[in-house]
Length: 513
Image 1 (cartoon, rainbow, N blue to C red):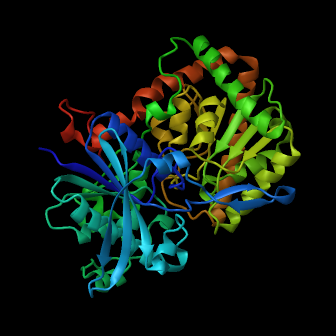
Image 2 (image 1 turned 180 degrees about the horizontal axis):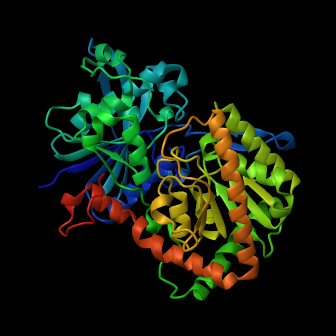
Image 3 (image 1 turned 120 degrees about the vertical axis):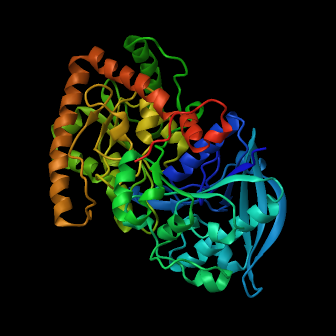
């Protein structure tokens, strides 16, 4: 009899919750809901953050103001209290006392733990990713609590495999009994996602860690397998961690079509797709007009909706507004995204978007970005902009959500776009694909940015002209996006690749190097 599939993660974007910061949390939720519909015995273990991540709103004169990121009452009402447990240090002292709650959906469940004491530790888990003054206590506590839940709460249920999501939880396998299968999934190509090894864990938890520098390497050292989340990400990760190449393979990210795809049945033609899309576009137009008073009319809706962080290059939108007035005036620009509260650069960029939203008749910025706004923006825009600096994006799923709804993407050559987009057929590319990792703060990066931006503008001019001149051709490309993306980005494909032993028929072969 097959046992539980367990995924340990620091965030998950369950419907109505504020327990996520961005793409990782949304991906983990899509896997959870998809696994439930397939009848998989799937258990997610994650912290519960009472104050969520962060939310933003407009203050006086349009200034960006931090507000509470709230869980919906509907979500909270579905949390079933299970029990409390204490997690002890090696010397017997209290590391954490936690309450455990269960969120169930079909055959799947999420075990969320809320840390009650010590208060110094509870404060680290009050908000998601607000732990920078004491990262190691955050990582050590999260790993210790997750492993105790596995050993105490799930005892006797049997375990098929434990998947460790990202380096924050690298210590989990070191706290489990021998013989438990653990795999490591890294979601970050750049150096920011590989925190230094928390050696204090050896004394606090009584474990022995390898002689490595980062938490990522510690996870790779002990894991049975290491997965990256796109082919491009695989190539970049090999450059950073060549010691573990023999363990590495990639499974490209996917989305829960039930959750994100609004066109449930193939329209049968580009003309029928156009009719459906125009209805969706009217919905987005209504949302924007009600919130801002701005009419969109027949203009091409171009969206940049992502977490606001430098490597995703939101400044391409700033340059477009400041340097290409005529081009900018031909479209309606929709932006949304949250900067981390400690990211001064990101907050300044969000403030710039806020200023444009107040000053320009064809620019809209929605500061409280989440799954609800993404649902409408990604399915109802005419064009999605996906602009990360090459080699810096692990996968990206926004272009998947757009493409599965017949919205083409203008993309840089990075992440999963390279596997999904055929230039001029179901979307467009701009810029060069890099094969080496480059520091985005360097002079070389600035030169590449300028070259990429010139090509970005050139391609955008072409797309706008095509939309104005030949909508039939434009919607042929949109329909191609719908047809080609839908079968590939389905979360069922991903789950069959990760958990092939649970499916009687042979799944799509696991992609390897």
